[in-house]
Amino acid sequence: MASIDRAGIFAIVRDQLSEILEIDPGAISEGQSFVDDLDADSLALIELVEALEEELADVVAGFRIEDEDLQDLKTVRDAVDYVYGRVSSGS
Amino acid sequence: MNLPVAVDALGGDKAPDEILRGTLDAVAAGVPCVLVGPENLASLTSVDISSLDVIPASEVIAMDEDPAGGVRRKKDSTLVRAAEAVRDGKASAMISAGNTGATMASALLRMGRVKGVNRPAIATPIPVPGHTPTVLLDAGANAEVQADWLVQFAVMGSIYAERRFDIARPRVGLLSIGEEPGKGDTLRKEAYELLAVAPGINFIGNVEGRDIMTPDVDVVVTDGFTGNVVLKTLEGSLKTVVKALFSAFGSSPDLKVHADALLPALLPLYESLDPDTYGGAILLGVDGVCIISHGSSSARAMLNGIKVAKEMVDSGMVEAIRTAIGLISQASDAAGDGR
Picture 1 (cartoon, chains in turn orange, blue):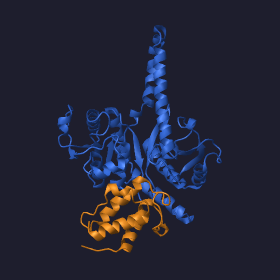
Picture 2 (cartoon, rainbow over the protein chains, first blue to last red; picture 1 turned 45 degrees about the horizontal axis):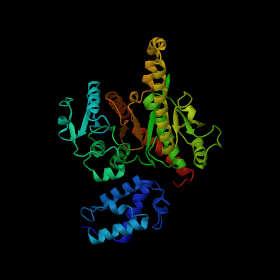
Picture 3 (cartoon, rainbow over the protein chains, first blue to last red; picture 1 turned 180 degrees about the vertical axis):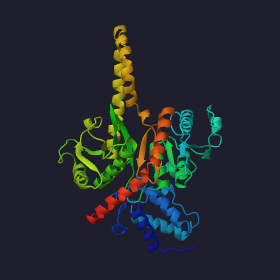
Picture 4 (cartoon, each protein chain N blue to C red; picture 1 turned 180 degrees about the horizontal axis):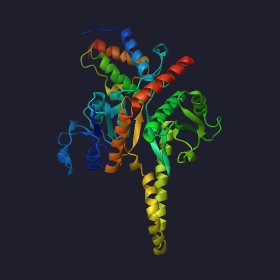
């Protein structure tokens, strides 16, 4: 099973967001709000979640972001922290 | 390869019977179809579907269910399986009369977007008596949009109008509150500037709501909130006018004689205004053909929607959108626009 550090998680989140929102990856930073700064709507966030689940399945078997946790992920940092926490605990 | 159109057997107020009848009619008309539904689908209907293959799907996303959440939770739903059939090369296109948002979410999450498309948009043909319909987009996919998205909507709507209605160089109008370039809010003014210089479209300037059902414009672009309000207003108004007309005709025996004489002229007009004639809306910008039919679709609406799906596949619409969006992205990059 592969391992990944927090910076690696941020890179994955940033690249997926860049792909989904059609924006320059260099324009994405951890402090940004998905809705207020990146103009991501609910469907774009679901796209992000599904893309992260698919990409991180190789790191943690069955990796999943719980739907009830989604409402707490307001910023890029929230998402990176959440995903890093799940990956670190192997859940 | 002549791949079948994947039909959501359980989507819509009249499912499954009307959906299945429409599917059988489409097959009889030469369009191969595959149903997507539960393995016991045949036991849920009196329609004989023994001649049709069924892609198994054990769940249904209800009409009033949260679209994105429904797609996340119900991975074995008819909508998700239909979109996967297109993604996996088992079907050429998908069609559903079910939950509009969930249909869009399924197509977006499973087929993916055409590279470069910011957000997919719903394009709906609006009938114009005696003329080709006007394509209205976005009719509800994106409540809030950015000015450059409207340029993409204009490009995609033009390609659809060309292929669906054989309109050469479709005239594109930006829906606003006045014809002059300076009319409208900040979004409309910014979009006007971008549309005026966008390559590959025939932009004719601002149009107003009253222009949509006239022969003066072929494609009308707007945000999804406004587009949906326009669509529902037109549908409601037409129904009210038709009802009032028939009520007036039947108000006295003397008038009814005259109405009977007029009916042969009025019925074709009524048919041209009937949404079932056009088979539904299309989701533009996803990497495949996805037809979103009206929730109350009849067998006739499904037949027409399936035919449209096949026509759009055969016309290479998605590839044309991919090429055109690539060109405007290049033009945008060259102009130094980061998005």
